[in-house]
Image 1 (spheres, rainbow, N blue to C red):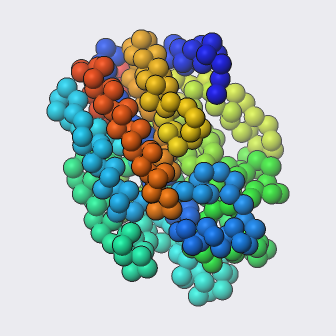
Image 2 (image 1 turned 135 degrees about the vertical axis):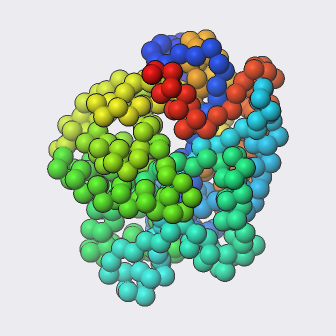
Amino acid sequence: MLTKLKQNILLNAKNIIGWKTDRRIIVISVDDYGNVRLDSQQAREKLDKAGLKVLSRFDAFDTLENKQDLEQLYDVLSSVKDKNGKHAVFTPFALPCNINFEEMANDNYSQYVYELLPETYKKLALKDATAYRGTWQLWQEGIRSGIMVPQFHGREHFNVRVFKEKLLKKDVELLTALKNRSYTSISSTGYSTISATAAFEFDKFEENAQFEEVIKTGLDAFEKVFGYRSVYFNSPGGREHPAIHKYLLNSGIQYMDTPWVKSEHQGSGKYKRVINYTGKKNKLGQTYLVRNVVFEPTHFRGVDWVAYTMKQIEAAFRWNRPVIISSHRVNFCGHIHPKNREEGLIALKALLNTIVKKWPDVEFLSASELGNIINSSSK
């Protein structure tokens, strides 16, 4: 972690510019929902045996959210209320599509085939009823109750070009992962500017044109799966170039999740640093929103994440900024190790209780609600 002085400078610096409000708004944006990464503990053991390394906590714990994950998460989110009597809400940046492992196996892994999320849950409910039966119904209940307000995180959480090229080469890592119903522990060897899990990264600038079809089919799939059109986008695994923002706009995206300091790839390994802030608009009129608080309770386990996150929130409120908390599903996954989920949810509950106690006038909003408020105030 950073020294206290550098930490305090950064906490304040990222809140100096941006949309202001007297309201104490809390948004919780959580990436990676709907994505199959690691299938099970058995799959992890087989990957280990085959020599596929655990490169991060995502390779070790990140699984498609199951029934227990959602039930226990809902309990925590509904345990607190804001000044309007509204419970805490997650904005899951979600993927509507996953690899169709069975169909690819039947075709001897000759081509990439994807399926919609409900189909994934249907298969898993048959494969592992204890963990997954009824999970998709829980998802729908969460959406209806407003406790989960998903937005678009891409069609799938990997780079299709890398996937297809590795498939053509019969890459051992990829085939081993696929045979274990997983897409994890995949190296990006040979791709200096593309991560295997980053959907919209590229090498040559002109490759951005290929993302138009992925975005259109992905947003259509999102609407079919989740029941409404997404208006908010966060790129999975790596940052996108603004060249694809027109494709997103054409399919309904009004709000762009972006970092405060963005290293923007221009092609062929050349990068440009771009400073962003909440309320900034691009040339197409889309509104940028910047996550100004980080909450990753199962990362750097020696850190008091509740105290550290509260310091970040205090800094945002000091500058009259809305709070947009950044997190990942892996913090709340217990399919591999229930202790991982337990630690994440205990920290989340403690954080929420501390927030409402310190600021009784707090308001819990979804990310798109905040976007609408910002746009309305600027008209």
